[in-house]
Image (cartoon, rainbow, N blue to C red; front, side):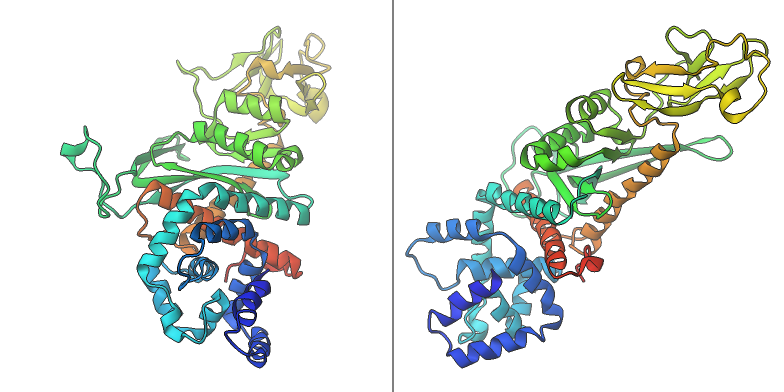
Length: 453
């Protein structure tokens, strides 16, 4: 794909002789750091978008070809340029980079577009946001074809994207301020509250707030590659966007949802409707941390129809000895999909402990607890099981993807203002991430699947 672009732009238009073209292809083998850009340009399925933009240009002036400008925008993402001016300086300095992007080598530095050209094409790309997202969807399909187990374990989380711009003035809260290029009129304030318990039993709380936006992301928890995303204002609800994002992935990449076995998320997504949707509609086991919503100091609740079987808000099931009233944790015996029940075994029989009331206990042979007992507490993968704990640890995959977006793709310090612009920038970063992975897989470099550098 990439070499086709170079050939059509230089050779068939008669801009350089054939021997220069051969020399150029020989230099491809010694690209060094530019090899990363070659991977992205070669494996990014952007032909449909390019044809649409070229048709819109029609027979107008073509001083700065659409494909070359688009390739240079991708180069800015790959080589971590924080602004258009930074990218333009590098293009003027680096002749090899200009040639890779598709600019006319005869013009030299004059081939580099001025700033207004980038402004105009970015506006065009925002108008064609649907086509840009189609590229992302095609890359996800390509990855799922190359990796048969891609999407088996998914992780869901949101990421704060800070805006360095100023917000609305106080006297403009009731009005609709016009964008002036200085203030970010789309961004707002978001807040996350973290709570926990120290070893000494005391409670702690930490509140984090920011001004900007929020990236909602579903990633493969094994390969740490994006599967779906949305971008909202910072105040948007994680749970509501989680519902929309899962439905969006199911619509755009249904094979991923069919393949998925578990979805992992933190307690910010602890929602009965979300848990029920994952299992009832998509047969995906939710592994979502739970919040303690029980009031009045309630520690345990009695299982319906059982005299001495109780459970806590974390889903751990206990039995009380009929004689001594001693409480013991019951052993998890598995999930019965056909019945929709969780099996728990008698601790005396399973662990070999002595129980004086064993003969009188109704749970000697074990008990079955239906998921309908409490859909938040009881999930197909029992919260008290060892597998739940090991699966939940995979949630950190989405945190590592978020860290790469900050440190490698430039979201830790950016100068983007406006919801449409931040959506486009997020889409470009995630597309480059996937295109790089496709290129690595195609060239049998799977060991560097997630590496941009």
